[in-house]
Image 1: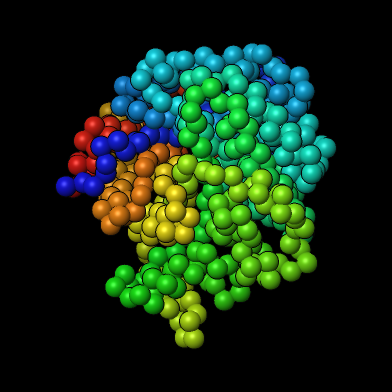
Image 2: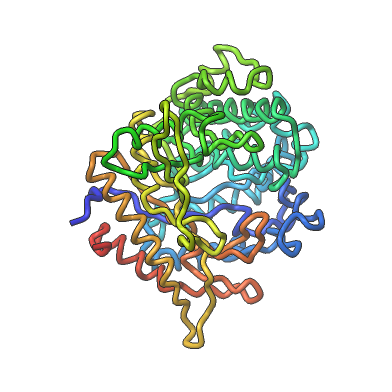
Length: 461
């Protein structure tokens, strides 16, 4: 018997830049991903989000498809430069109207919208003014958020401020692998991260003060998850907990080249109102200067902790309280994107987060890229996705059974889409998209997931 509560929020997710199409029509402004994708060699075969899934024109059919697949909750994001082409000042009425219509269509189909306010498509015009390095960036974000909230909050009550800051700051501003493609020093990267956190707090304040219906507010970070090798060993469990929250030398999950995968750096600030002392010591003079007022702004009360979990690392206790990475077995399963398949990350991740931050957890993304194509019979037989999701959801169910407060789960993603630097070669969707014809073909997993939702998880066993 499954442990999912009767009011559990089942859903699927997508993001504006990945599905809408970013062509500059109806007044839409450019974002940093438009800039980045135009640079040769930055994305797979030069792919961009210019057309994507053409959701901007096909949103009504897509909402009807979601309804037919039994999706009761849909996590979407708003494109900041579609609302404000220059990132601030002049409002694009056609952009606002698009999301106004989209919300109405979703609600008419019995689908509740969960709105993410920033999912990586930072306005290009603001980037030219310094982007997240500019201390004015939190105010720019707050002004944009107020426009969206005043327009949609009579019908939207569930909000997320930002998605995966670890990625768009770390990969976008330090390694250059994602847009905007910068390779900044640690001091500058941490300063941008600090501004992102202030922007998150300012957004929460704006939602609370301007929402016309009582809001439920969270955010959607990711991070380095760890699981104990021996679940009966208190030492291994503590090693896994330390691996998640104590980033720095001695932690096998830590890399000096990519230090921003820390969970605690972001979440201790956003939830507990402080940066972790250990990491302040590790970062030393590169750590941002901040005031108590800024930390109070960052640590606004949240209603849930959203988290994107795809995989994790198995660790064990080492000598003298250390942490050791457990090597993966040769030939251990991986996804098409070569990410490890680690179902217990959906048990231990929510458990550790719920214990540390004392907030209900919503899994805002989970899924895999698969080798999916339309078979000769006209269907997409993605049995590996079904097996993957079944394994992960059983672990999430186990966590709930053990008392972890998990309120919802959003599969990533509702349809195949633009997978950032990987272009269109990675397919994460429950629905296959032919990008030349824009034909949607629900995969076997879409119908299986409908049964999971209908039975509230009972079909998992």
